Length: 313
Image (cartoon, rainbow, N blue to C red; front, side):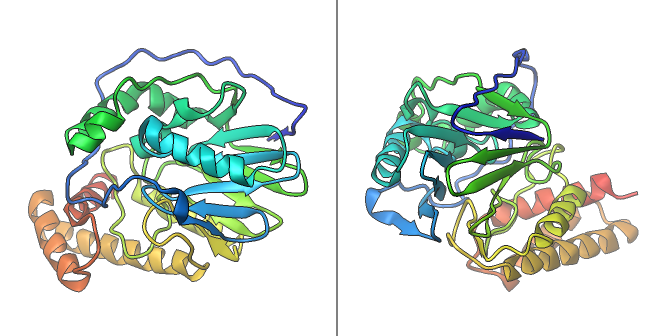
């Protein structure tokens, strides 16, 4: 475990990993709407936590000495909107930035942050960044002219701090606990718990009325369920998902688990019957779209089914 405060900027050496062949996540136009972040969508969650609602929901944890921003928005223009909100809210001079996972809308606004920002993330996520963010940006650029414009000339920096399992940041009167349990949506999913306010920032792991995305073999149904068990034990008062509804309560953890367990059971039933993974994906997609017609990301249900087939004994 690492403990950080405004006087400590422990820097961990990190060797860049050469780009390698990497499965591009399933990113389609059927996914969530991707409007620009706007200043007016800033909302208070608790005494120390605020959220800028949009794509994605960007979170600010405000202490007397430092601020932690969670995620950046898509590209520099959205990152600049995030920085305007941070400057409006900040009480202290120190700025930390972390990201819930490596996907483009969570990381590519980084260059809008000032040079003295302390960038911190878990080691597994950073490895994914090096391997996969380029392909992910390419997929996003193909979605729209707006995305193409937003993702021009993107530059990244090395983190100032890397941690393996957990890091605590003393922001002054409030503590943010950053932690990594294992793969779920991505290999390097990071979660943040604001202890004094009992606010959980779970990335894509807990969301309301959105089909979960398990885009490639790095995603894990078993890991997702394990994370849900771990975070349920925190008994958070508020949960701030990355996408969709920006604030939910702890009951959403159980709702997410029930969905995943039901999908897993149905997929295993079809596998036992000898149904191919492709046909099972089509069958379960049709069933879940009929049950939840307004949920985004239905094209990703097949990926969830594939993970169950791959990872079942």
